[in-house]
Length: 548
Ligand SMILES: *[C@@H]1O[C@H](CO)[C@@H](O)[C@H](O)[C@H]1NC(C)=O
Ligand SMILES: *[C@@H]1O[C@H](CO)[C@@H](O)[C@H](O)[C@H]1NC(C)=O
Ligand SMILES: *[C@@H]1O[C@H](CO)[C@@H](O)[C@H](O)[C@H]1NC(C)=O
Ligand SMILES: *[C@@H]1O[C@H](CO)[C@@H](O)[C@H](O)[C@H]1NC(C)=O
Ligand SMILES: *[C@@H]1O[C@H](CO)[C@@H](O)[C@H](O)[C@H]1NC(C)=O
Ligand SMILES: *[C@@H]1O[C@H](CO)[C@@H](O)[C@H](O)[C@H]1NC(C)=O
Ligand SMILES: *[C@@H]1O[C@H](CO)[C@@H](O)[C@H](O)[C@H]1NC(C)=O
Ligand SMILES: *[C@@H]1O[C@H](CO)[C@@H](O)[C@H](O)[C@H]1NC(C)=O
Ligand SMILES: *[C@@H]1O[C@H](CO)[C@@H](O)[C@H](O)[C@H]1NC(C)=O
Ligand SMILES: *[C@@H]1O[C@H](CO)[C@@H](O)[C@H](O)[C@H]1NC(C)=O
Ligand SMILES: *[C@@H]1O[C@H](CO)[C@@H](O)[C@H](O)[C@H]1NC(C)=O
Image 1 (cartoon, protein in one colour):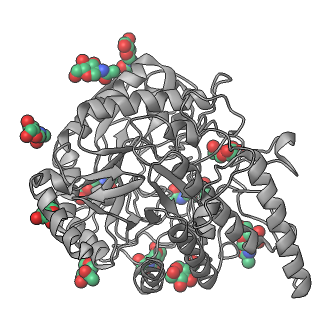
Image 2 (cartoon, rainbow, N blue to C red; image 1 turned 180 degrees about the vertical axis):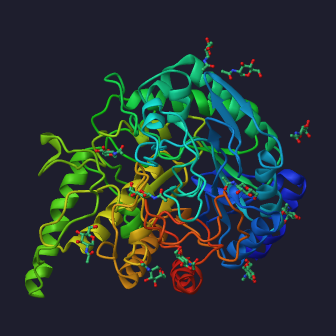
């Protein structure tokens, strides 16, 4: 009765460790664990949670998220402003080289509420500490002098004026790296990673936040930054390369660990690979042996996952994949027709090297990110990556597939590449954000480095059915290849309290002239193009629970 004995001994073994701390998430053998059991999860993002107007709104949202079956929620634990705003939540004032943290009721007490109630609903929270993205141009052109002076504009929404979206409506409107750079008197985005004064200020901020919640069992992980890269709206200096970003990660991760030994630390980077980049770490995965000899008993899947990902193997597997789709397309007489391609247009301009037979911009380090070098940092607990085909391209298109099928297929390749890479470092891997813009959401879509929607109508985006099919395929791929966490971007909540001049303003509808926000109902949570509200949600939830 071995089975019985295991059931019996495990609790006894862990009983001796039973403290409040047994709810902390740990990693073991490439898995997340809570209190001695594996913890695989589905999550959602609600970056705007601390900017809601009432505690009851926070409670309702978390209750809804929990009821939907999610166990992890990701939110912004930063909210930087350059001048003290009239209304709404803010956490840190960064002005002319000095910083002030707001611990008041419109400051960190809002984040306290999020963690308190998350704990009550059994939810874990991934707390992101800063953002790569904070575009400032074109937000409000009323005062040319303000634009010239690069000062902060009053962007509180007032119905009938040309004011833009309210502060904190867009995920890229919570301050972040570029605010530090501007306010400390620097010019390049990557000065954030290298300048002592800025690093000091950011470490000060992380110390305050991290020590505040270091005993909270509701924290899943400290996410160092959302989508850190060499450049943003502010450009990169010529010195920035992948090791610049990796080195900064190592320094910050070590700092967080020194303040809080209880919680996991994750990067939050997009997941870009760079096979040819020089590494900071000497513990990068070793190149594959010339003839790997899988054990005969292993399944096709685990056998395949034994191969570490290399450039040569990626290109070879792609060629094989293309051959298969070619044969299938010919057999089904279903060769693709030309289509207008809008996806991935915010991607970095490809160099000649990347075109054609190259690995593609997601695999060549052109964003200044080498996710594997970052993952090799000892204090980085798990691999996190993102998938947003409307904003990045994730591969080289197969000429035998339609644009939609290529988008889905490249996503599958991206997910499996990450599963394999993390496995070779024996760390868990989680897709911490993915989404597709649907036709209904297209007018609300504002890409990461923009402040206004590029599409004024529903000509762009996939159908709801296409979205569901892609989410289904990616979730299945993630589960099959052993991802330990999958997070949809993003949650949509209704019935929130409105207040003039705040993120949840009354009467925001398509009539504000500088935007085309499709927010017909007051009291809806912010939508940057990915939110899924009410009725639509049950279908998407079913996809996730089926996958699990
Ligand atoms: C951890 O597991 C033990 C044994 O199953 C259990 O008694 C204890 O309540 C658990 N603790 C938490 C915080 O879940
Ligand atoms: C979701 O929140 C709303 C309030 O915003 C509430 O009326 C509703 O009952 C909640 N639904 C669930 C399933 O918790
Ligand atoms: C910014 O700070 C510097 C000193 O650090 C000071 O000389 C300068 O006057 C300040 N500028 C403003 C606009 O406050
Ligand atoms: C909004 O902007 C447009 C174009 O700049 C201008 O014609 C219009 O008068 C503005 N409306 C208000 C209320 O400021
Ligand atoms: C960091 O915090 C320390 C202590 O509060 C303070 O003296 C210092 O000025 C801060 N540094 C920056 C750059 O904000
Ligand atoms: C966290 O727990 C430690 C040890 O129990 C305690 O010393 C510390 O004050 C706590 N910190 C916070 C912010 O609650
Ligand atoms: C957004 O990013 C793309 C490529 O990274 C760049 O070409 C474009 O200029 C950026 N736009 C803004 C407003 O920063
Ligand atoms: C829809 O928007 C696209 C670009 O955003 C534009 O080219 C097209 O003309 C628009 N169509 C209509 C019917 O407004
Ligand atoms: C700020 O909030 C107050 C009270 O809710 C409101 O009266 C005021 O109009 C808001 N300010 C702006 C600029 O909307
Ligand atoms: C949207 O704005 C228009 C014009 O200001 C107004 O007539 C309409 O009632 C608003 N709709 C909602 C749902 O607030
Ligand atoms: C706004 O969104 C709703 C629901 O998603 C959709 O039915 C409607 O067509 C959209 N309106 C516009 C103008 O995009």
